[in-house]
Length: 232
Image 1 (cartoon, helix red, strand yellow):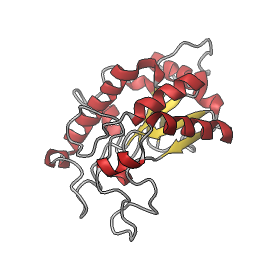
Image 2 (spheres, helix red, strand yellow):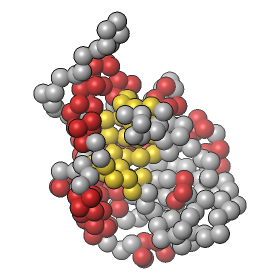
Image 3 (tube, helix red, strand yellow):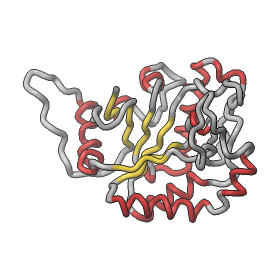
């Protein structure tokens, strides 16, 4: 799996009759690791091919990183939402593209540094300056569930692009990585509260291992370590 995805992936719970793979000779597998493998065997490994959407304030630009000659196409959330008026229609188009491509799952950036940490739903988590008032993420979750396409939520728990020259895109306390981890953990739990088993899993890019390995309160209570399915 590490050849397919970097960072760390957590798969959410689900029923399956698929048994975990047998351990290699001499390798004592713990119960948690066997449970992790069962989750992989359930749908992720057989799916093999998914489609990744980095979508938000940078959509429509040729690049959004610091110093790039083409700036973000939208200066405010209001401008973006005026262009992206129909969350349900956008979600339908995304899922249709996944199915047309023959992909078996969808990965979506609920926020991303290239989009200046724009959160794609009306989150109550503090620290992020740009948040949608329309629920684009929720519309996509529901459409994926309706169409039987597992949805993996991508999060990059960092602030690397938050305080560049076109920022700041996070509040001042988010300069401390511990606060970033705490905010992302809060957002994970918020997403689970909103959507529960409709979420197929979480992908943490870059410094996401800090969420998995750091002690409470930075570890999501409802996503234990045995759900880790891949690491760079």
